[in-house]
Structure formats: C-alpha cells, structure tokens
Amino acid sequence: EEFLMEKKQIDWENLGFYVQTEQRYVSNYKDGKWDEGGLTEDAGVYSMNVPGPADAQTVFEGMKAYTTEDGKIVVFRPDLHAARMADSARRLEMPVFPEERFREAVKEVVKANAA
Image 1 (cartoon, rainbow, N blue to C red):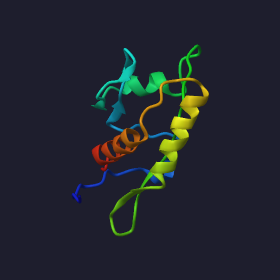
Image 2: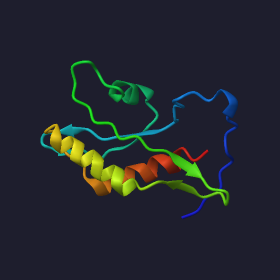
Image 3: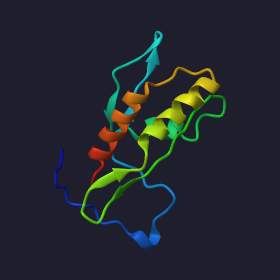
Image 4: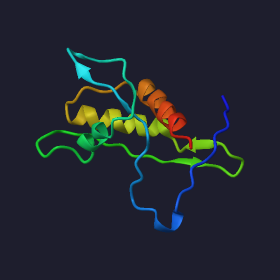
C-alpha cells in the first residue's frame, strides 16, 4: 500500500534525542486479555510508560522508521523487535503482547506519523 504525504520540515541541525510523534498506539491489559487497542493523540499515554513510573514494571522496545531515497518508509527488523518485547515481558512475568499485533501496531503508528 503506497500513499503520498508531504513531509514535515525538521530542523536536523537541532534535533534532540526524542521527537514526539502525533499519534501513538495503546492497548490495555484487563481481565486477563489485551483489548483491541488503537491509535491515540494523547501524549500522556507515552510519557507515563517511558521510562515508566518509579514503582512499575515496564518493557521498552525502541526502533526507528526511515525514509529511503526512493521515498519508501522502512523499519529495520520489526519481527525481531516483537520477539524481544515478548521475551522481555515473559522474563518479567508480564502479559505478553502478541507479536503479530505488535508488528501491526508498528505499521499503524508509522503510517499515521509518515509526515
């Protein structure tokens, strides 16, 4: 699936470590299962989870999306990121977010923030 979108103008000379995106993906674990999840513009969702409240268990898997010379947007090995995220959750005895849903969430977030 291809789509055209005008890219935002970014000041690359003054780019910090973290640039906040407009949309994020959130899914909540309740009553023994993950809900449907979806995109949100609520920046508080992300700030609560990274690096995480002082008394909470968290798992973080960071990755970057790149625009290639021919204009395609790519993410390097999201399958391995999904597997590491699942492994980390298992080690911490946390509910594992399904790897296929993780990969789909990455696609949704990248597409929603393509500009």
